[in-house]
Image (cartoon, rainbow, N blue to C red; front, side, top):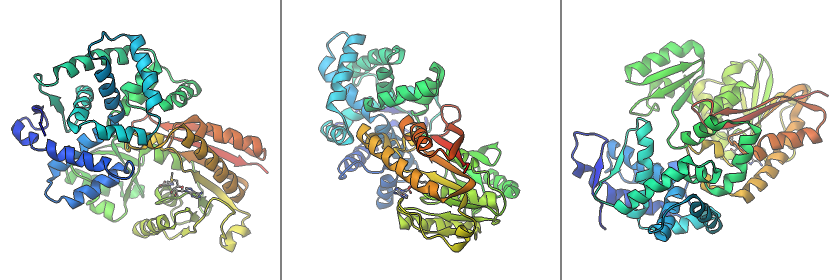
Length: 470
Ligand SMILES: C[S@@+](CC[C@H](N)C(=O)[O-])C[C@H]1O[C@@H](n2cnc3c(N)ncnc32)[C@H](O)[C@@H]1O
């Protein structure tokens, strides 16, 4: 395989040759990802690959990880460029031509299977030409650990074509152009238009939202017990991390992970995105109250609620996947929370809670952190944007509506129902809440908000607080 000459700016004192040696390995990893039965959950798949390849050092891993994530992040864009280039490289580019090509592209690529089979047809070298050109634009504006540059004598035609195309995509008012530039499948166009309209986003907010998708989000941690803040920050400083403090949250930057820290191992803090923390903050529990976290997953929010309750109240954690509840129990033990009771639930009839719940006529708080498209987590998991198409959104919203309806039966009079997702799609959020309120006049809306990006440097999530009046 021909390896293009490249210049790497990761460490200026290292020879270019050193980095060139990595490209064949990168291509092999990329092929292996594409040869899975379906698009793998990328972060999980990559850590398994690294575990199999102990020969990769930590710098190599960081480089491969950044490049492969860029591959997934900008894979839709790369495919668009390659198809467009092959068809129109000798033609003068103009807005109408690009528009027509986008319509054609949308027709041909309607789901992840179609994308995946086309990605397999493009040589890895050509696929990464567009990725590298696109990635450079990110690098210009942000400090990043890795930079990829194409040598000027290689791929000149592609580089010139890219520059012309980008000037159209960046300067157009057409939302389809922005979607292509941000490598978001066009099938999200109507959802994004609806979000812009309903949230009344101005141009800056739209730009901020789309630009933040270009790179990974920062690492956010949540302090379990504020009285231990000093202990945590001391260890972070000692281990060379930098951080910014926001109430009980810290934005942490460092060359290594935080898993090895004593403060993490002894449960003094949890890794939790800021937007996810904002959801938990809606649950304003008082000492002694009862909470049901009915889609608890691995227990991120269960832990947060437990830290608010300080063992003076009870939390039931449920999920359809029982193995996830094992994780909830493990984390509870680590953090010293003794008031978490795990009970599987399949989203239908209420589970058999202990008598204590019946005695109180239900829960003070029920949290429905519903399964969703995960569109708000694309920065972290860019593969998620290809996994869901418009049809999936429809079936997801039916499931969300059903779970919310069933879970609401667990709320006592004057208690609260909190509905949340890690999605920015209106039909999974405000749309569900609106339908629920129509069917349940005994509930009223206290508040509903989109959380995180574009207003905070975090994922984008949604939370609505409803009160049972009678
Ligand atoms: C968004 S995740 C929850 C994340 C979790 N609350 C956290 O903070 O880490 C949604 C969860 O809903 C669960 N789920 C999906 N369908 C369900 C159903 N019909 N009934 C109950 N839980 C369901 C999934 O297994 C998944 O763990």
